[in-house]
Picture 1 (tube, rainbow, N blue to C red):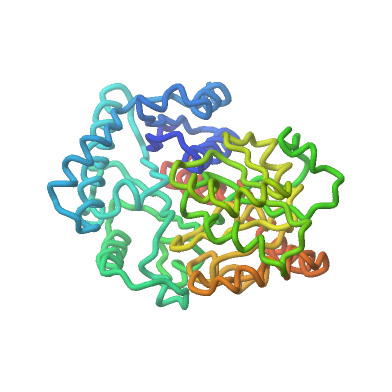
Picture 2 (tube, rainbow, N blue to C red):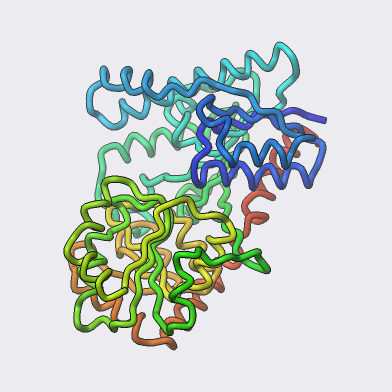
Length: 409
């Protein structure tokens, strides 16, 4: 049995989901024991409790101090330059990771370190050091790289920090301590064509039979013949509700379009949901809100119940798990023209695109998809043909296979 350290201090959203998928694959393979570093504030999170219960034989939880207040105070002293803020945070996390490794070495040998969110925790610092974690070999996943997108034909605005990121990735991939990087972005591997970098799909697990249970808030809509537009996930200002809600009232949009907003709401989205457009949609029974955490069973049922999925996220330029889930359930999407999501939707032909600067395109997209079941079917099938391969096994198997080869399991 070989020991590895998996570092993910925050049990939130897709972060802990990635850990769960990796743990499932590690237990299936056998021969590996995982020490999972979790922040003290996340130890009692239901997802962590579930992990501990499901993988008792091959998992040990290691509490770590995840004091972001300390990071923020240090970052403020560096000014407002984005690269400096990222460096301050990552220097803190690299120190935390090395402290955990040092503590574990006193009781056992750690053969490998894996970091699922490299771009959040150590990109800059690891790029600047040949062996950022001493003699422990390491690898990880980069989730939100953006510096390469313009060169790959994706519509994104120029940022000076992209030049810094490009240099960091180039240096990181040459470091001897790093054994491999994985990315959920299919374009970055084409950009670098580097043997230390591989693409893995942004995963979802909505294929096959599920214990799917529709949220009780939607029971009144069953059998009513409504066209359901789903907005799903953590509902914040990035979701574009301030654009969607007024557009849904346009006369060109069929009155049977019903908007379902499902997921915990951030306070910054409250003004949109308190607007006159939202009030009008509620009065005509065309808007339902589910402001809470959605269970796995409810998630599966929601995407199957929906007719259209909203992934129109202005100024969000990287990947989207909601897009993957829509594809696996053969649902067409409405997306921003800009960013990685827009490029994927255009390449696959799985939905309608709308530019943030052209509100008429949102109304046109709503009208077109909500009024034609045949168009929805064709676009949804295009997404399914691609994303049906984005399974949790396809995500985790290459990662675990690589770790096993490095530590000789």
